[in-house]
Length: 394
Image (cartoon, rainbow, N blue to C red):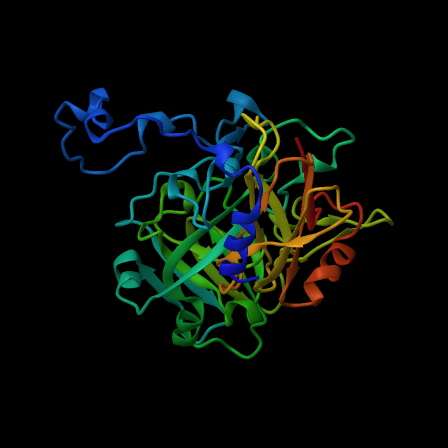
């Protein structure tokens, strides 16, 4: 559906005028009556901050071990309070196993070794001199939305349920470029990526992904990476489970096979019906979620509203999103923004008359295999990436 059709349908919804107050007897002189219109404003600042009226917009923080390990857990994006497809850097989701290290970029180095002809050690100054590329990608924790698997869904904001997902503009050096410079040997089929945090988070990466769209990321949304996002350098594997995009990257080792690290054996596996755990289900499946109106929000009055949300797929682009206002009995196509970007968030919108209260959405990826294969491959007992259709009653 194109935007002209979408706007035409929106204008046809009855009760639109009821959503706005009527301006009666107003004139230009009366408009300048607020206190802030009568005083000189504040001065410049070195780094801009949100309005003080937006202070309640903060991440949903989960610390399963409390003060014993305050840096272990996750901070989820308040997706119910955001719009568009780009997540502000200060609200980006975080998943950490041992807190955020304070790394001096002048001391930090990245080692590339193993099955290569020329082992290389990169300083941060050296990496900044390489040709860079800029892409927009989402990052999602593989455990996102697992709270929805509870017998009784938690009555929490959308971000507290589905907010372990964010989308940023990333800039960095294609990993392929560094591997080619080191002279990757023919027997190298996997990489080990290891972080410089105290847990030394590490994951095994197939060489095909490394030579495809993997990035050594140095910038996020136009500025240097934030410490909690891997400063000064992180691995970025677009469309794959977020844990594999190793933060605070310290070394990459070329190997013949997967290393089977503690982080990909004790965790980040998928339980199968026979009790065994399946490893290496990397790609994130297709998914969509309504962010507005959504759980815990109160609609001030009856009348016209817009249903809005986000959709994504680790396999590529989002082709279409449909919205239902009657628990899935009927479906209508929504307007999309950002659908041209693969492995990025797409924002969908659909006018709504506010009558029905059971709303749900479903997304269709451009790559057909993504629609049905990911759930089957992960297994029915997996607690990771559990759904591609999201229902949010109010």
